[in-house]
Image (cartoon, rainbow, N blue to C red; front, side, top):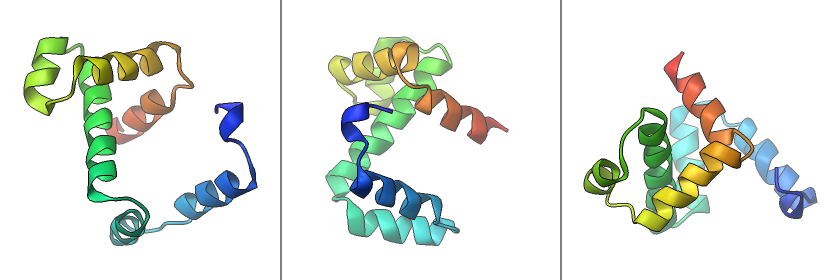
Amino acid sequence: MNEKLKNEQMQILMQAILNIETEEECYAFFDDLCTVSELKSLEQRFEVARMLKDGCQYAEIVTKTGASSATISRVNRALLYGADGYKRAIEKLEK
Protein backbone atom coordinates (compact mmCIF):
# COMPACT_ATOMS: atom_id res chain seq x y z
CA MET A 1 0.00 0.00 0.00
CA ASN A 2 1.10 3.52 -0.70
CA GLU A 3 2.86 4.66 2.47
CA LYS A 4 1.30 8.12 2.13
CA LEU A 5 -2.10 6.54 2.77
CA LYS A 6 -1.12 4.61 5.87
CA ASN A 7 -2.37 6.27 9.02
CA GLU A 8 -4.63 5.45 11.93
CA GLN A 9 -7.79 6.70 10.23
CA MET A 10 -7.12 4.65 7.09
CA GLN A 11 -6.45 1.57 9.20
CA ILE A 12 -9.81 2.04 10.94
CA LEU A 13 -11.56 2.41 7.58
CA MET A 14 -9.94 -0.77 6.25
CA GLN A 15 -10.94 -2.66 9.41
CA ALA A 16 -14.51 -1.41 9.02
CA ILE A 17 -14.57 -2.71 5.43
CA LEU A 18 -13.09 -6.05 6.49
CA ASN A 19 -15.80 -6.40 9.16
CA ILE A 20 -18.65 -6.15 6.65
CA GLU A 21 -20.34 -9.54 6.59
CA THR A 22 -23.08 -9.44 3.97
CA GLU A 23 -23.67 -7.93 0.55
CA GLU A 24 -26.55 -5.92 2.00
CA GLU A 25 -24.25 -4.46 4.69
CA CYS A 26 -21.69 -3.70 2.01
CA TYR A 27 -24.21 -1.83 -0.15
CA ALA A 28 -25.41 0.15 2.89
CA PHE A 29 -21.89 1.06 4.00
CA PHE A 30 -20.70 2.22 0.59
CA ASP A 31 -23.99 4.01 -0.08
CA ASP A 32 -23.36 6.06 3.06
CA LEU A 33 -19.60 6.45 2.48
CA CYS A 34 -19.52 7.40 -1.22
CA THR A 35 -21.47 9.49 -3.65
CA VAL A 36 -23.15 7.73 -6.57
CA SER A 37 -20.51 9.23 -8.86
CA GLU A 38 -17.66 7.88 -6.71
CA LEU A 39 -19.20 4.41 -6.64
CA LYS A 40 -19.73 4.45 -10.41
CA SER A 41 -16.07 5.42 -10.88
CA LEU A 42 -14.95 2.53 -8.67
CA GLU A 43 -17.26 0.17 -10.54
CA GLN A 44 -15.89 1.35 -13.89
CA ARG A 45 -12.23 0.99 -12.84
CA PHE A 46 -12.81 -2.52 -11.57
CA GLU A 47 -14.54 -3.53 -14.80
CA VAL A 48 -11.66 -2.02 -16.78
CA ALA A 49 -9.23 -4.07 -14.68
CA ARG A 50 -11.20 -7.25 -15.32
CA MET A 51 -11.32 -6.59 -19.05
CA LEU A 52 -7.59 -5.79 -19.23
CA LYS A 53 -6.80 -8.96 -17.32
CA ASP A 54 -8.91 -10.87 -19.87
CA GLY A 55 -6.82 -9.38 -22.67
CA CYS A 56 -9.38 -6.93 -24.07
CA GLN A 57 -8.14 -4.06 -26.21
CA TYR A 58 -8.55 -0.41 -25.23
CA ALA A 59 -11.14 0.26 -27.96
CA GLU A 60 -13.36 -2.56 -26.73
CA ILE A 61 -13.02 -1.36 -23.13
CA VAL A 62 -13.94 2.20 -24.11
CA THR A 63 -16.99 0.95 -25.98
CA LYS A 64 -18.22 -1.32 -23.19
CA THR A 65 -17.40 0.82 -20.14
CA GLY A 66 -17.24 4.38 -21.40
CA ALA A 67 -13.92 4.77 -19.59
CA SER A 68 -11.47 7.33 -20.93
CA SER A 69 -8.14 6.20 -22.31
CA ALA A 70 -6.51 7.94 -19.32
CA THR A 71 -8.55 5.81 -16.89
CA ILE A 72 -7.75 2.64 -18.82
CA SER A 73 -4.06 3.54 -18.86
CA ARG A 74 -4.07 4.28 -15.11
CA VAL A 75 -5.73 0.94 -14.34
CA ASN A 76 -3.33 -0.85 -16.68
CA ARG A 77 -0.35 0.72 -14.86
CA ALA A 78 -1.79 -0.49 -11.56
CA LEU A 79 -2.15 -4.00 -12.98
CA LEU A 80 1.40 -4.01 -14.29
CA TYR A 81 3.28 -2.13 -11.56
CA GLY A 82 0.90 -1.71 -8.64
CA ALA A 83 0.41 -3.55 -5.37
CA ASP A 84 -1.58 -6.39 -7.03
CA GLY A 85 -4.81 -5.32 -5.37
CA TYR A 86 -6.83 -5.60 -8.59
CA LYS A 87 -5.23 -8.96 -9.44
CA ARG A 88 -5.97 -10.47 -6.03
CA ALA A 89 -9.57 -9.26 -5.98
CA ILE A 90 -10.21 -10.54 -9.50
CA GLU A 91 -8.61 -13.91 -8.76
CA LYS A 92 -10.74 -14.32 -5.63
CA LEU A 93 -13.89 -13.64 -7.66
CA GLU A 94 -12.86 -16.23 -10.24
CA LYS A 95 -12.57 -18.99 -7.61
